[in-house]
Image (cartoon, rainbow, N blue to C red; front, side):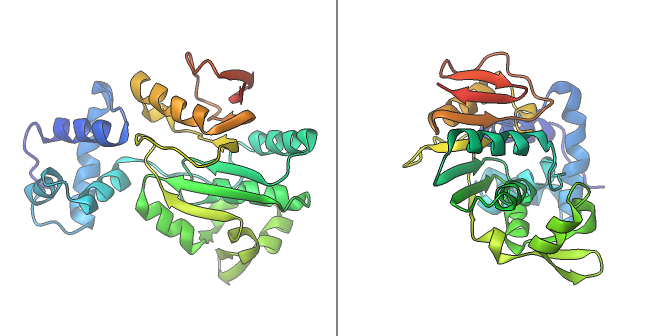
Length: 259
């Protein structure tokens, strides 16, 4: 265990909120220290103060390491699959073409690839997905496109054979047929984001659980202005929005429509 001076954990909490909008309550602040200890050990820091000194100088690598160890990136293909069915039904109903989708917290890529498989299985090929995340390390994994068996718990055998190549026992690589529909980019939802064209659909799932009201409203404003009129926003099934921009209307469980 590293010797972390009193007050440093609160500084970490404040920095995480200031830079990334992630709110860590007083009741959960105790979870930070073991994560920082893991960071220091795995990244081979000599002392805790070496790491904190880097943070204080604004070192971007140290910030990336911090977000990597503070956040949780547990996911798998077709998680909360009802959303993909809703997406497919909406595309068919509206006869959308040249479909644009933003996965605003894509982690290691299971969500955007699940969307791509859903659409390609139905013969829909005219779509593009912007897949973004805050954590550069998970985006690097995403870009490699290599997944272990535990990510396929809800993937059909047909999809596994069609869209993946077996690399070794229990390890699979994504095929180019899926990858060509996806652009991977690092984006921070706390930044003042603007896009040249709004999206037809936005997935921002299991993100708001990390935010307080201020961060949540700021992010929702970004998402709302980034949607086309009639576009849909998908949030996590366990997330509840008590307030949201006037341009959004709740359409179904964890689905909102842009007016």
